[in-house]
Structures are given as C-alpha cells and as structure tokens.
Image (tube, rainbow, N blue to C red; front, top):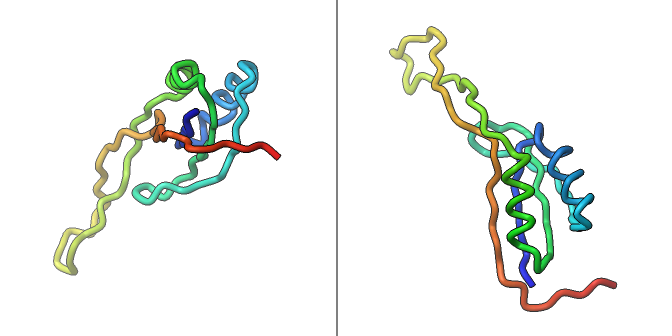
Length: 105
C-alpha cells in the first residue's frame, strides 16, 4: 500500500476530488497555502494500491497556469514601479510513500 500526498491548486480541487470519488478512491482533504505565491491549495491524503489510476486522474484534471507575481525591490534605491515576473503554477505535486501499515477504525 502507498500513501499519496497530492498538493493540488485550489481551482482544480473540486474536479480532481469528484473524479477520485467516482473511481471509489477515498481521500482526506486538507486546506493548505503555498509559500511562494501564498495562494490556496488543497492537500489530499490518499492511501491506495491503485497508484497509477490516482496519478492518471490527478494529471488529467490538474491544469498548469501562468500568473504574474510582483517583484519586490531589494533596497531603498531600487525603482519602485511595479514589476512582475510570470510564474507557472498549478498542476499537482505528488509525494508517493511506502506505507508500512494502514488501519481503518
């Protein structure tokens, strides 16, 4: 058995969750925030033997997006006009771990 920790962009959460539940893949959902853009994510905890199916569902319903993040001047002499850098966000980040033991009580 594996434990999949999936970090999903908040805009994709409902769609991913719906398709996982339709496939009878049960999960625990935790609200989370990314440290770089400080935007909402959802972290899914999934204990399963159906790793390939979970990966397929998550990758099918998680989309990458490009957002603009403001660049903060490094010192007081820097130009204070708004400058932005485009950053690719979204998709999903998966951690797949061996699960030594699983108990449902």
